[in-house]
Length: 207
Image (cartoon, rainbow, N blue to C red; front, side, top):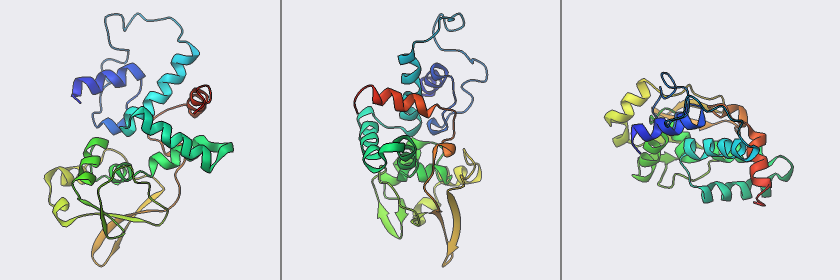
């Protein structure tokens, strides 16, 4: 995805999405893209508001609609009365997101690439599936080869986000790793979004 496309997405949604890895989209043009972006004053419909909130999750986490629907169904099965918080807990514990939040990569796409290329170990085992959901207590670290990659070193020196409270760095046998301390919640999502609107979007579609 080009930088221009990433900027257009963030301007359309009215929020910077760290997972896209390109900050600054709203610094100069904090209005929707397009010829009439500045002059749009009509009130959005309820559906449009709900769709916008859902799209934020899709683009930040870099997943497709059907993938998100599967996570919604899984969250509803695990916690029917509070499934939206459960959904966020699942999305934030995806391996590609953990790699991103640990500062090993500057974007979700870069984090997913590290995983798919076999550069990430979970509890000492190499993993290649970015959608893998980690459990509390599991440890994530880079392969020796990955630690030498220039992109990884740059990201670690200047991470896109601060380390969230549900993660912690520890060292064991001279190896530094990130550890999942708790199940994250909506407060850990690194951008402004309305979880009620997302819940209503899927409730109306029988997911």
